[in-house]
Image (cartoon, rainbow, N blue to C red; front, top):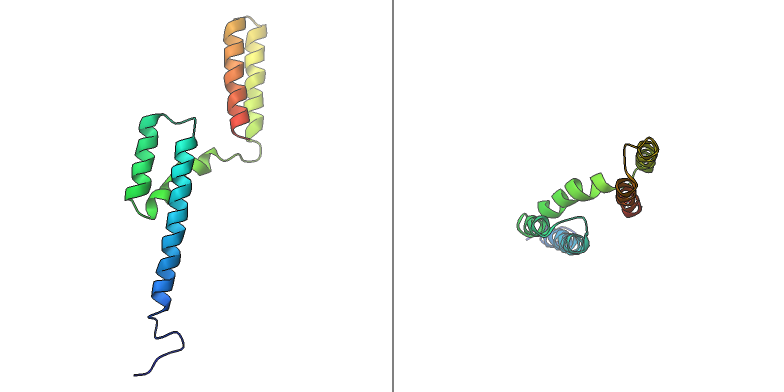
Amino acid sequence: MHMDGWGGGFFLFPFIMLLVGLAWLLLLIWVLYDVATRRDMQTPEKVLWIIVALFLGLIGPLIYILVVRLPNRPVFGQHRGELSELERLADLHERGVLSDEEFEELKEERLKRLKGSV
């Protein structure tokens, strides 16, 4: 029986599967941690993402990254939109459209969102 340098592929396939399994496990642990520590998700949404991550195999964590993490990633110029929103609120407040309480509440909400995306 002739054996190639890598044992005819009998060693390579399990090694690759072990690496894929470890990568999935690390990705799954990261997704579970990220879901558990997110403050912008309600409990039912967290439960849904945990189920997706656990029961869809390697695809589950990848779906989470594509749907939740990448869209929330700050990109160049994203903060400019938040700042222009604050300027618009200040203008509405100066013109009397927003009361002091409404302005402060909306301003704090925008500032929290701005700080959360940094």
